[in-house]
Length: 534
Image 1 (cartoon, rainbow, N blue to C red):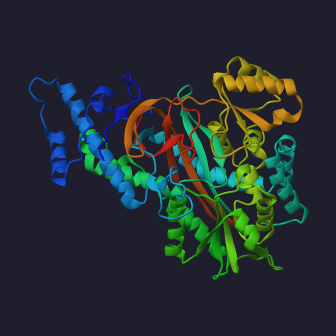
Image 2 (cartoon, helix red, strand yellow):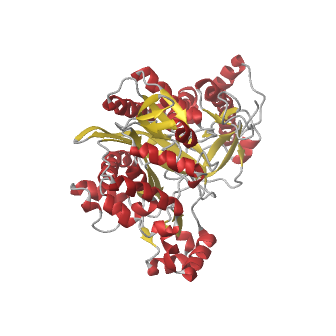
Image 3 (cartoon, rainbow, N blue to C red):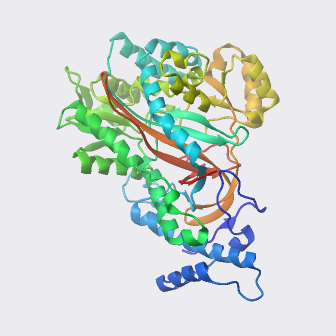
């Protein structure tokens, strides 16, 4: 493979707060295409890059840029090989069998070549919020009346939310108790340059993706900096350890143990074509190695066809008792193409198996509930600790319902300052700019309950930096912004809290001109962080 970082942005950018260390200029990087060196030549090139003096007649700045460009090009090759060896891979969308046949049609997961600089103070703040959000999700999930009331208007115009609420209402009607409750969450943040603050984008309570690959990219960056950190001026020790896959597996394993049936399995509910199965593999392997737990993978349709609930509440799939149901599908309308999938969701909810998430936890993660919790005095309904409440509020961005006519008017006048969010997960759903203005005007004309299908959110403006990104073996530089996700694991059995931890992190970096930020949806690359004292 021959590659060098080609700039997609033709103006040099000075890295700022939250950015990367200086890279070679776009011109010198683009000019450094090279043939892959043999191992001996590679070692020699690295040594030369680290120690060579400027060549006669070459300006020191230009020489430094050429050295750095050569190092980055070498790093691309080494990183791609590392990804293949260590399983940092996803299914290739160009191969029709990649999502159904394991080991077929693999490419490296897209990644940033260097970790994103991130202030240690904001990192500490984000980590401290995780157990508080975990506890908040659990408390809100127990208040069925609040969930039903808060989403009552949304269900009038959003069929998907209505179907989820229908299952929730059926569980309420039979007084279904979830004594053992497991949550694997991820709270996503950006650093806002306007206010110099860490602001929450959303809280995910179902299918919090990339604990496996997110952990791997941290190790990839640590390996690269161990080899090249001296010439780049970067210290691998500043990359926080990321044990997300191990800690998620620990939570699932401990939940399995609480269920107290040694022959039961963990059921992972997946999509029919799952090109991110290799992210899930790390959880499956850790569960087997550490707890001896068998994991079976089934689609919602397969659960409906093969599953049943016994009279004692046991969920049985293909003849095997299920201790824990871990949803990696079921968060979007496309996951329910027929009534069979909805019957499967209800079947699992009726069982005694531990659901991750339960229908109540799922509903807590909706955009509307996020907006309701940001209202004055609502957090006090669920939490007692005033310091914890203050910490959560400090992280809230502006959130409003479309009933707020003054805010809607402001958004129409200045659409670039807002984001319009529907009740959807998975990336690619938010509305920005002129499209936001047009949608708000359309909704105003329609009147009625259609306004309840959306919420308005303050738009967050992170500072952009020039970053080398690698996708499909090709490296290019572009202006980027990053989004930090903090994983949290929560396990409770009646009154006993067994786990309530911050459980690793996910850093995603995207081209700054892109509004969306999903890796699986093709908008971003995986990244890690380099802690700074800024």
